[in-house]
Length: 169
Image (cartoon, rainbow, N blue to C red):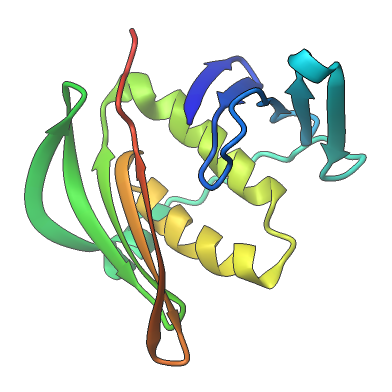
């Protein structure tokens, strides 16, 4: 997916599992709404997470410390699209997630945008499980690469890879 963020608005073109590239999404992080647009067919669909504006997360000094206890450092760094990232792993009964996270200050706004986006879709149980691992990884910075292996009843399930391939400054 290609993301463009300005203020509280995020535009996303392409998404995992979507073969139709004529669609793009506009996400309003303040309103908590998602708009899917397909210009070639003059179609759009809008979903709102709630009628209330998205709230800022409470500022708790121990949040990063809690994540440090659960997101295990891999002890290695790699470079993606010219950005240095440190590896972390989160294991739960539902998934094993590895993230290569960048703590560069210019990417901090993107981390906040992803946190808001995660909270917008935390309503289903599956989203809660994914958001937990994602939140723990986001405490360490912006995801340059994220690999997730689903675990179901002790059996390995689906495998997804999300990689940041370009950072334009």
